[in-house]
View 1: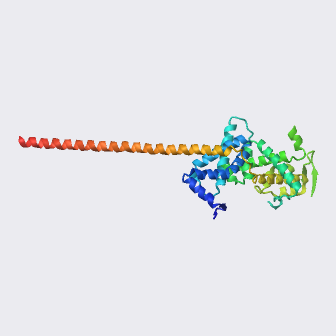
View 2: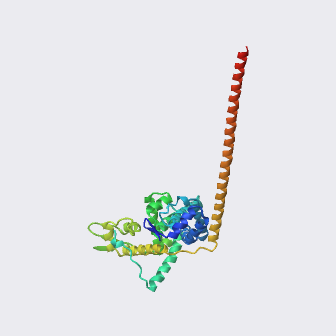
View 3: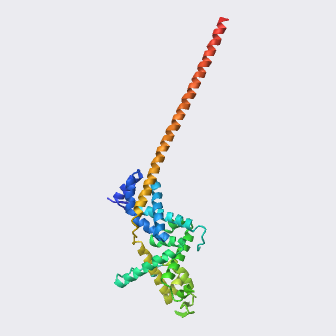
Length: 199
Length: 147
């Protein structure tokens, strides 16, 4: 029987594994790692932009989770908790790596999104866009990339993002705007922008 | 409502009685209002309604946001070595933790033993001192009686 806490449905086997891991059962924790490692790695990759860094971040994130497991209240999915830890580890990692290096510091119903049609042309275009988007994300400055990934891909609230980054919500919003604009200019340049970029 | 192109970029400016927003103001605002983070004021909305270029830019932002949301469902498969690496580092951390617990337990036992020995020594010293005092008092009394 799954447990439902604050809107998140948590499978009962996950609850049991978390309880066992909290009690010191290393094998239970290993099971949790097996179940969540691909998601954790994906987030780490999205934030760092390369495989080697993503591996390091994922490893560090699990170590940190293991050490602080007793503080996990169980009011969310284990994977959600891991997302927060992974984001934190990735940001620490990126801050260390870029330390000393110059980095760019950088109503409505009418705006409602529409779902894509599932025609082969649309799917091919979506795949093309996804590939270019992955490239464009990895080229963004880490500060901007972190905000747009956490907000627009992982749907974290602004308060959480600001807290993770240690900045104000207003600063997080400014970074998000910049990141979205840069991505839009890179993926879908408007007339005149392509020439401006090439200069 | 009439719009006039202004310059080679194709940006248009709305000429209306209210002198509504410009294309550059819309371009500044779009990344925030695209998902309702910021609210588009009436001027901006009227401009977008009348400006083909800003409408196109809005559509591009929608596509971008949709593509970003879709990334959430994509899970990358890590290289096969990742899981063993994580498990081995967890194993090492678990062992270190166990050793630390053991050492902490032993340290507590040592400290407890030393404290108990100190307490016993102190108690013994006090007992000996009180006995000696008692004996000396009795000796004085005997001397007084003999004299």
